[in-house]
Image (tube, rainbow, N blue to C red):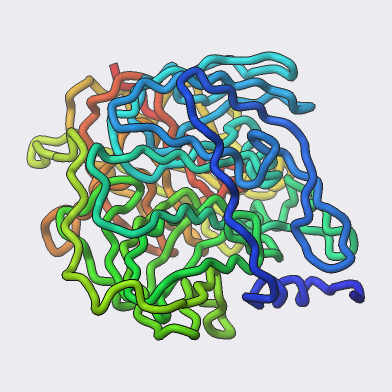
Length: 464
Ligand code: C2O
Ligand code: CU
């Protein structure tokens, strides 16, 4: 095979079904399990390309899947066999602050050849994920992430459960190695580090078998550094039943596209409606049109007809956000980036103009402050209800993630949106989120476009 251009790489990732690849085998999960982060290599790009070097959990991509039962106490020993310090963040898990995995804020960095024991109760069922939180713009881009699934006591009525971890890799088109310019000015100041090779479960052409009228639960996780996936169904019909792990009160029929920003998840329950011998797809919309993100080879019907619409998933505890009228009100103005309006901001206690910020490879500010500060965005008393109004005064979308608690959007038309841990804000938007400050500790609030987080879009709240 001839060498691929950057453009070919994108097209390659768009071609589906060249060869069937198997989903990754599950690791047997026992309490007291070890998660070792190490370097590895795998045949990510097909053809005559060399294997791609990566950093991963359990020596695989995506990292070893962690499956817990709701209510279980997870005892996970993280062993760092990487050449760099690291920690693990359990994205979306409402757990003790000491287990949140943020270096310098909630724990010390785990140095190479050291280990750390994470212990927490999986109180919420749903689709979560875990990833490195030291230099995450680099470590997540190298592959340090995996699915974290918490099973409901009673599983929904589906024939199969598929975990689909989406990512895009920025690869050198000659060598198929991960581009190591992790702090590139362009990706920091624009839309983040966007890849040129899109994968599902580390396969660019993931193809699964299915039967007509089969009902599948698709647990979709966006692990990409910056890519927003616009997803649609073809030959599949179904419902969204959970966002960011949290069950919806009522399943929502999927009629259009679903936008999934970095860090976000959606659980779909879909029926295979394509006839036997055809293909069904989870489709990713690109500027040029739809391409296959996952293909299903449809085999003979497994049932005579379709089942009735699914019941909602059982609710998790503490999903109510109340006390909005007397809530503590906060504001966050997001500024900066290329084509933005940011004139000056404070970085490390120094007021700098935009030129000065660029010199420091910093581009973004929250309320005029660049990156982490000694004092939090707000000190909040435990039990308070918080309403946070966010304005995206930048030319780019951002996926804002709150650690430790889920929130609901206060809808302009009245009412509250679904319980989520990450909100995707398009350029120019103002949106308000509300949450119960019921989890004490120091919690990050940052953009999950990880290059943005590293160049200004990071703050925290202190709940005491
Ligand atoms: Cu998934 Cu602080 O991030
Ligand atoms: Cu951002």
